[in-house]
View 1 (cartoon, rainbow, N blue to C red):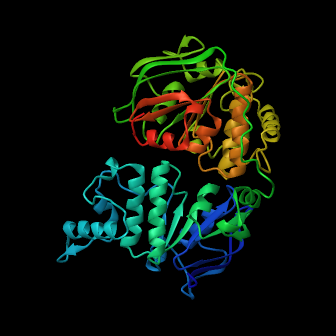
View 2: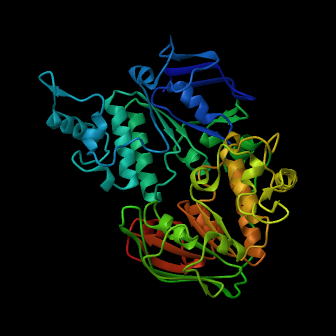
View 3: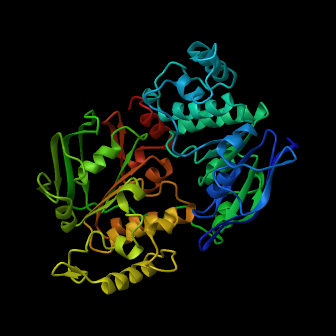
Length: 504
């Protein structure tokens, strides 16, 4: 593992007002799994986008096998043997595995006809050789998330990639799928491939990496190996201070029922029932965690609870009142707060400034407005107060919210929703893709709401989050609640099995 296959030297990438990468040096050896850690906004993804040809560096150079190269597009990077699996998969759902893998590089018969049989044979060969276990003829839309990820890896291997970049590859996987992915990556490394593994999960970096490199504020601030480090040291290196990794959660003191769901059925945009006969209740002062692999109905359930999706059958009652016929604003007036799954699509208006995003749920009320006129000075003053209270890192409330890091965008949503008395909090994937410091902050804020007497529904695919925050845990599989138990009765292994469809 001593041969250097890739070097980044003095990489600088600037955006208006920001130096995303500040003279970064990085090297990767043959057969090595390198974990790249850093806070949101530390420059990890920017650096990999430079390496993959999606961005051009302002300064510095890239060397592959000792030879200086310039990548003007991902095609250039692929020709040099560098491939990337993005956090959001780049697959065509209605096509087969083989069709997705060979798309743009199809084997042909004669001069004009795609050789589908040869494509399937090549995919099967790669699948067998690397233990990827994928059926070439299966439709991608029918595959579990973990198998779709294998298809992305096969796409790179089909194109002879020797360096594989994986951006947050475990974000939506069950523990069993994570173990399978790690076994695949270790097999690829033994076969001579090199892997750059971008993650914010410290346990995973320690479990899979040969070496760990940490970025902070665009610079490399340290490099280590798993046998010379632990989670606390890595967290401190990432953030620049000690970070509490254990939640100090006092026992719950459940009060009156604030939410009751009875035999709820909800359909998705394709008119397929994705929530099927779900029932549960939530009391004041408790957190109900809803666990499950992405795509098992949690998204539609939370949208229905927030009145963003119609109910096909069943009943939802908030504070004893049926929500049938109520608007989103009615729920807000009742003290319901909502943190959506996709902060950028559903929680923010990205081109709008921070101060306007912080007023999206109360702009219609004095003192924000009167007689149909917005009072911008009032909105700015309130935004400046919330920025200080919720530690939103920004030079000005006039900046577009799109310019903030993911963690700070999430803080904007939290500040907007939590800056009033709350009776019920609906939080969907509240820390997805966030760094350890942002996770620590948001967990504390959720627990503060619980201690203040709010009932909380927490949906997360992160097992540690569910186990750490929840007082009771419901597991959803194929639209149904397959288990609903006190947290004390649920461990990580059993929770993972239930999420994968094992019998309760």
